[in-house]
Length: 336
Ligand code: AHG
Ligand code: MN
Ligand code: MN
Ligand code: MN
Image (cartoon, rainbow, N blue to C red; front, side, top):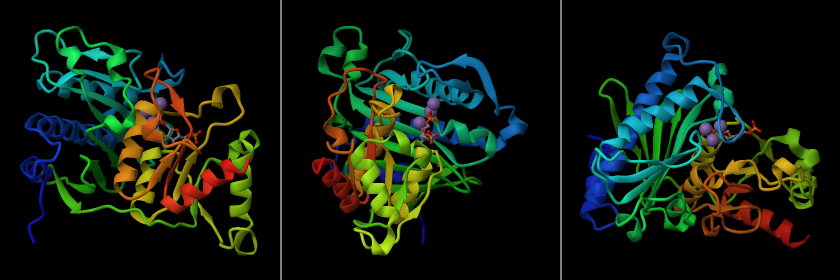
């Protein structure tokens, strides 16, 4: 049976009157091609001189890995000339990157975490790229695009996706019409449709959280995890399993594939008050994908996609995955 390619999927979405315009299709094909380039560099590892850290720090206060910067450059170069964008924003750039004047501009804004899971780069564990597409506000066509134009709630996204560079390279994408999964055919260099409709089971007994932060968690999270650890004789009456890969894309991809709940909650540290993960290019795109797959995504209490951003790099608590489990965590917060 001949499998569809990413282009065929996007042309079909364009034809059946979804939000996919020709311009958005071209943008997503360009991003997917850039992810192939990033995956190629990742696969080379030491042979490509891409491992290790740089002296530089990013706006997050993190020491940048070579691959953080290289992935960012690959996405900038691939998307600058295409004519579909007004500007781009990235975890690795302090402020927005406007399309240079010598290139035509388009109607979209692209945000990305070019390399997610950087702490796993040098130890050969799955890492990825996360991206989100917003429409540029009308007003931005008569003036210079500003950072404030990016500060739209996650409900405004027209597309979101991630690439996970693991044993297979996969691209998972939503344009608001469910979630599809592509596997990279390395011989042909094409993203081939391998999952027509990714859906997250409503229930789970597998949680993903960094347990070393337990002493910092707020009460409801502590109580929820304690109840999970109490097993089948505890209040939740089932034995839970735990996973933590420390690459959001890999943990969320597992949940997209077999269910689960992913948690990076805000905590009581000054640095953790708002959570660790970034709203605009980690939490929002992943929440759009998870919701489109029948899951749920909150900051512990409120729907992430409804959050009104007020800063490009703002952080947020994240609880996402199997709908019934995410709602259970919200109930622990309500009891507080
Ligand atoms: P990034 O590498 O893009 O900075 O993101 C890392 C994030 C996320 O991928 C992961 O879930 C989380 O950091 C892991 O945090 P800990 O190392 O604190 O577990
Ligand atoms: Mn990340
Ligand atoms: Mn990153
Ligand atoms: Mn980082």
